[in-house]
Image (tube, rainbow, N blue to C red):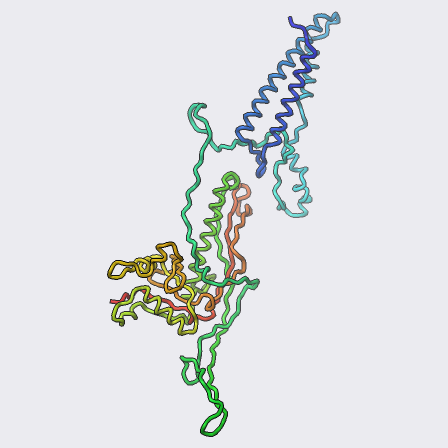
Length: 448
């Protein structure tokens, strides 16, 4: 029988402490997110390997301690029990490998976040969530693997999972708001005066300004200046809220940052789509903005009016004639908004030789323009309609609160379901101060 080797036991104990220190280092590197310890496959493999070595070394130490006990029992004459010696050795090993472990509940009660509630005196909502601290060294509560599910089949089929990125649909880059000078406001209601063109005492449709002589040749009286009276109407543009939200599981947003960005981007995209519609065709009732097309005083031009020309007008011709109406109202048009189908007709317009008339620069990658004016094509504009106008001076867009994303779990029973709300919201107002600066074009009556 081999004799008990004291130096060998010390070597094994040293190796045991080394392995335990390595596992402590590995455990310290675990990431804690939303109260859950996340362990990578490499970390888990190294940790399990060390635990296996620790158990093996511990078994060897116990075996040598038992040999020591048996050897001592055989040499002693007092007949002390081997069980007593074995129990003492086991106690030493237990003292070597054990540490104080606190439950998560106990740690939560001792946390600063819980104590901030002051036993309910400060309310029931914590200012910030409590996360499982990194001091849980070696205490692997709520450990989850980086994979949500393992593949079926033999263990040999398990390998690295490759996840291709989600292919998102492209979004439109041109917005109706791009045609406006946008201002910020801190008010809830914008009050302004809407000016309704020139009004003359003698002719209500023309500007009365004229050349005036210093003296009247007949009676030598000083020349009388004509009067042009400006017509003003007091108006209000209330700030309106535009918002929508989506529900998501908190773990999805934590584990899939790409999915979170898609949710955020899609919510913002939805705001922009609805904003285009509100600026153009908002009804002005309820919580709607009063869109430009629903503002009284906007000029009208019908495509059929061009049928009087020797050659029937195209849609591009109708837009140019509408621009003239804006010029005659003393406003230079700065943009065109129309439906994608109508823009398609304009871009595909050809002469008798099959040559494109207006789309050459667009086909070469230039900015979409017709008659020197930028074009915004959007489904928010009703098909068969177009809007030409001086967006820079005829109307003003106000941002009370720019579009933003907020996340909260304080909705219904979302807190206990680990669900969250992702909310996109903005507040804005629209004031159409000079409606005659805009011309609504109607394409539904095509010239023959």
